[in-house]
Length: 173
Image (cartoon, rainbow, N blue to C red; front, side):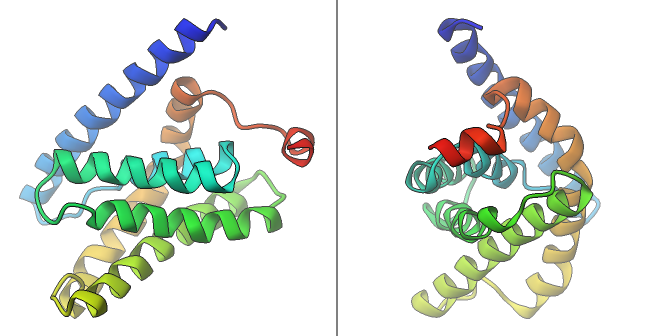
């Protein structure tokens, strides 16, 4: 595949990401359900494809894009996605299986890292970013739906961002 094709696929992927995340957010929040976090899953894709520092920076960039497109505190989701990537980058060398267990562990660790970053920011800013109500009502829906869509969205990410490097390629880097 040529470099122009890869760039075009990446642009189309991000347009699909923005459109689908916006549509899911609009539709699901009307019925009181927190949508899956496709931006976090995009950060996961970068964490599985890039070395540690570029993965963290890409995760922060994806989260910043989410902040710019959404409403709320600028940098909150950027720190959250970067926190998820930090946990995932730390754990990825221990994850060798490419099956269901690996998928579940990958998504859960990214979500826990994201919410840990949210909790740190809540403490640091002395604000009400993460409340008990959010932990009870938002986190379970987000985690469940993000886990549910991950297998299908992983195929979209492979199409748009390219395949994950093999274990041999990762060891060579």
